[in-house]
Image (tube, rainbow over all chains, first blue to last red; front, side, top):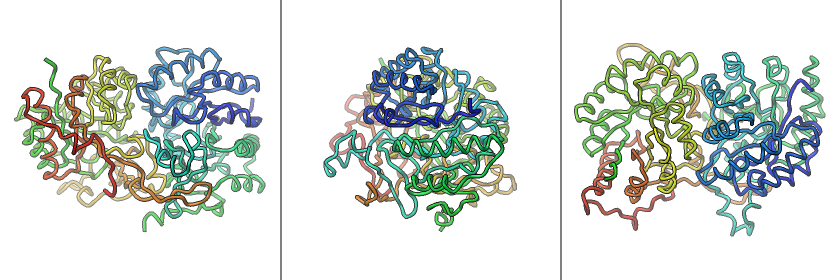
Length: 317
Length: 317
């Protein structure tokens, strides 16, 4: 037992098999944005069962994600997926949608629920309400600062899971605009969103997964681990649903080692770790909203991190 | 005979309230200064609210008040203090945007009629059941929900279902978007008209520090979105610019589907647009009034499907 949990997200069996999970303690299986995502665990239930077995064989905690914005016609499959998850021994399900939360609570009460970032937990009062529907862990809304997050933990003491590194979810759509490019690019869905796609306005950038929008910069909390631990946080996510197996492995290695050092009382980060994170961050590093600033700004001792200078002055001009 | 749906119109000023009533709205919804999503986007001060309620009630119709920010813990008490005054005015219908606030208001004020706003993100039969269980009396669905989906949703008893038949569908779903705050999040002074209540020197309702969070629609206090999604983006694939484009967004107008929604059991047809000027609001409300009345007065209304599709692309609004 590390004294912390480091987890990530993997969308399909191919990526799971290709990923070295040595430095992870748990994995969420499935893409939350789109039913058509390539071989999505949430649609391929035989793959899901195999994925859960693979994780258990490796001694990892096996979690299952669910859709962020379902419609009526998703729900029969969601029920089957939850049933398969229970049967295969999933440790928990991550839920972003309140209707799915109700289904899980009523029909699969044995399955612990982690509330995801799209469920819009902004306050302790919101967390308390969902705790009544069986939730045992919460990812607060990404817009919250560490101070606001601390207010939640102080008020109701629920375990929170925080995005530690990776591209932060910024939005979800009912519509995939990449379909506009099928003919022009001669690439069909579901291969379209496998391309590395960024949307840019000057130095602002976001990553596109078709229906999902993520931050262009990688949220990076490497130098703030002592504070996170001191404030009682123990569950951390490296968001890597759209990343390569190399990203998953190398970034996890950096954070796993850094978390162990921080727990032992050390907060220093070696230059090699920074080089690894900079190499994988296509656009740069940011802190998300953790310090009450615009999500793409970086606050810390490493302002020279690639492309990470504060941008607020530009927005105001 | 099937029930006739209620026509619920928006109003951002007292003049707009009068125009909506004159055009045939059965009910009108307004924002209370400082407490409604969108911040300075046309809200009514307390005195205006009192006048609006007087006019609406004298016509035998009803007024709904949007209290759809997510107040910070220190602001919640002020919100709860305001509710008895609303009830004293005869206003029972309140629109909220957060499960924590909804549950708290339900617990404290059994006379309130609570509506889960469109920002709560309900789209499915399970979502509606969740909000019913939580104590909501009504839930608002986006106009992207079809009459067929509505029919399934109406199998949930014990809650009124509203459909936003006239609205702009942005690319990212309402209540699931942090794109603006990723780019720019900064407390900004409220516009002069809201800086203090005229002649009293009091801080505006819901804005303890006279600030709003520019860049966020849902954070505590008064949020404001600057619609970054409506600005052109450059699309990069594998590091190469391949297009310049806008996110797709649509104006949804389901006027040709009024009959279908009514038959599916929709209780309320709601129109978006608290910021609409009177000269646009009145004909919009009148058009929907005619469409609803056509169900009881044959040939009174001919929907124009050939010239007015259910949704059309919006560029450069």
